[in-house]
Amino acid sequence: MGAKLDAKLKSPPAGVQVWSACVAGQQSYEFESGDIYNGLFVECLFEALAKGVEGKIQRPEQPIPLEPLVEKVNARMKAELAPFKKEQQSRLSGREAEGGAAYDPKQAPAPKLVIRPTAGPDGGRASLDLVSGILREVDVPPVKVTRDEMLLSVKSMPPFSAKALEAYKADDDMTPFREAVIKARTVLNEQLKGKRVREEWQQPGTEAQFKESVRNYQAKEVARVMRELEETLDDLKAAGKQRTKEKSKRWQANYDYILARLEAQIVYLYEYNSRLGALRKEFPERGPNGWRLASQEKLQGDSAGKKLAKESAGLLRKLARDHPGTPWEVLARRDRLTTLGLEWKPNK
Image (cartoon, rainbow, N blue to C red; front, side, top):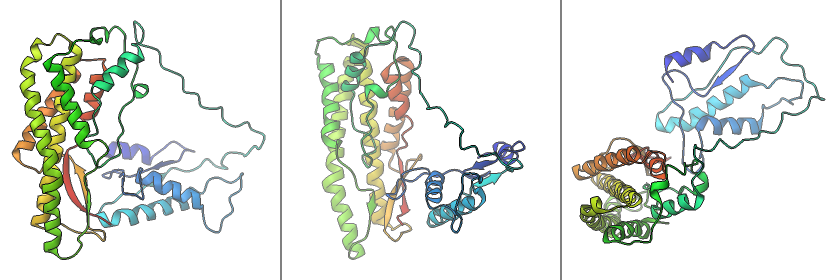
């Protein structure tokens, strides 16, 4: 939170209270730890509200006891963040209006929230079959194979203009160029769909035994997948020499997207493998349950991975720019938000 926003939240109008999740110089943390799958503040607030304030029976005519709830939330956040040497403190600013708000048991409940559909694009919406067909042709697993698959469906996409997708209709032609794109997508799915890499590690036995188990995992699991993907990348780039001869904008976009995703996947596995190598070399700070891998923006792997990362990011930028108002733009913008760097953290 910046100083300007903090100053405004600290001084609300008379009769208004603002409960902010953090204060100036801090940020709101989120977890995927198994215990918390949410924003930390929201999770602690849910917990505090469920337990209520001890020794106090809340009645309808009484205001919500915010001050003791703030204390409970802050104490819980402090306990959760202490092992990570992080700090987040919520703050209640302002005062309730004098006398509060009168309780009226006869007052009708708030009207039901109705989310109305947005207006369609100019020229009408593209058919769902057309959009669904495009998504099937670029359906690949998430780059971070430690996470549950959250593939976009046609219903979760924004409405697309029929005019914008007019140039992307399917045809029945099949060329070596298109076959190469299909093969690359198939390999990504065969190697990664429904599978996970280990992101949490504990040390069983001696240090030497543990390091040997990590080395075996790298050789038997990670190296095999990387080899398959790198060979596929070579084949796909070779097929790219025919890209300018491909008349279909749809398959040109498919090629660019699958190429970018294949490169990003290899980058992530490079980074993952390099972190396993670093763990074998020297143990980082350890928690009660060993170590876990956390995302970060900066890559720590070798130069080959960093070069591929730049190529993948550049392809996604170009894809969004060259195909505005299409599913490829949405996919490219989404995937550019994926951070591929990794670092070891104590696993509490």
